[in-house]
Length: 415
Image 1 (cartoon, helix red, strand yellow):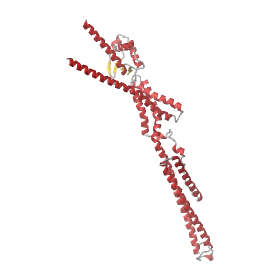
Image 2 (cartoon, one colour):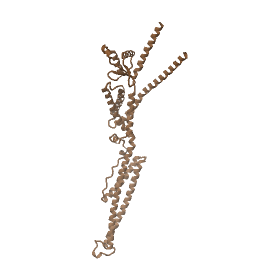
Image 3 (cartoon, one colour):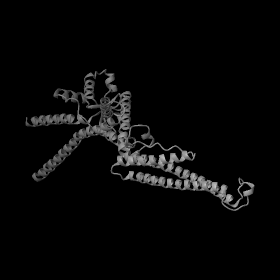
């Protein structure tokens, strides 16, 4: 018997230690939830402030950010303690405030994550746009070059034909006594000189186009180096200088030969090329799902942990209040476990109490006190549920009552 009793005490003490360790662990987790919520709020607040500061002054952005993050935490805590059937207006007001605050926080936080995730791609897109514009412009210059060379070649061939006719004596401008005479006459000399001049100009034109091709090659090379340049500013200015050389050469040729050319592209300045991303509708048009998920994830965890955070009452109950509340709760008769796994009780009068005109002012005062302190949660007009922080108080009172009964039984047995 003694050994059996010792084993029971030993198993009871082990179970008590496990229970205390588990309770301590759960308590530490609940306490640790508070700084986690605060850190998440600060992180979300930083990204929200960063987006807001692009539209308004810094101190106003800071005030609005603090208000937004406070509303998210407060409304999440309030919704956790409200049953929508108990007070629909209060519940939906808190829910609407939470949704508005979350929308504002996620929208302005999205810009920061969008900037981080899309900064490189935006820079690459700007370079690609420059490449496309320059390539289109160079294609137009190639067509211009071909048109000018073909035009000058046709004129050179035409003059060469005139020289040949003058030499054979079949040129229509020759006098009758010189016609059909083969040889180098004055008409031939005139067209021969004209042909040599045309030929010389054509060779000069070919030389100019070779110089233009050199400038184009330097332009393409400097454009390629923009991807790997260690000093981007120097490389970009070199590219712009090469482009201006090509543009100036082409303008001279087109104006000299009367050829029209499409307008050259307006290149970005270095500041425009390297400018930071600014909030605009463009960031929503080129929507980044990854940036949006990152922005929403922080606020989601803040809301979730705030909703799941069980906080203590504003002030502890005195011993007299605990005795009063315990005695008043014992006067209620209808208790059950609800879907939230919490103890639920009906606070309205029973039919018998209504028939006897029973005054329940004292116990309703106790219910109001517990609701005000956060020890009870209102479900609807006739029922409330116990909050987690009231169970230890009730358990202590029940334990005291059991001890008093044991003492009374011991005293009665001694007598």
